[in-house]
Length: 102
Image 1 (cartoon, rainbow, N blue to C red):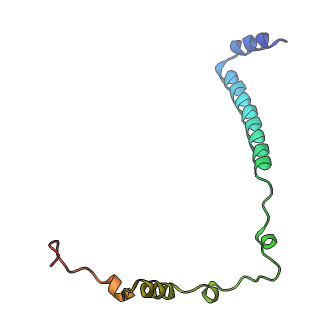
Image 2 (image 1 turned 90 degrees about the horizontal axis):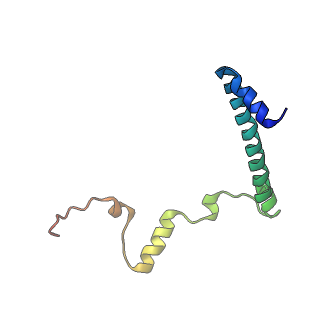
Image 3 (image 1 turned 30 degrees about the vertical axis):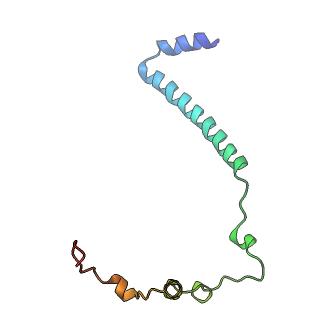
C-alpha cells in the first residue's frame, strides 16, 4: 500500500481513529527527538569527574571556619587599611540626620 493510499484510507476513518493515528505519530516523533537530544547531550558534555577524583589525595575536607578568615577579621583588616573605624554596631545604627544634612 503506498503512502498516498494509506493517507486516503485514514481520511475515510472516523475522527476517533484519525486521532489515534495522530497521537501515534506524535509519540513516535517525540521519541526520536528525545533520543537525538539525549545522544547530543552525552557527546557534548563528557563524563564529569566526581569530587573525590578532583581532590588531591593528601587534601582532606577541613572545616571552613579553621581555614578561612572570619568576616569580622576581614572587616577589621579592610577598615585598618582605609583608616576608618567603623564597627559592626555603628554600621547597623540608623542615620538620624535629615535631608538638609543637620
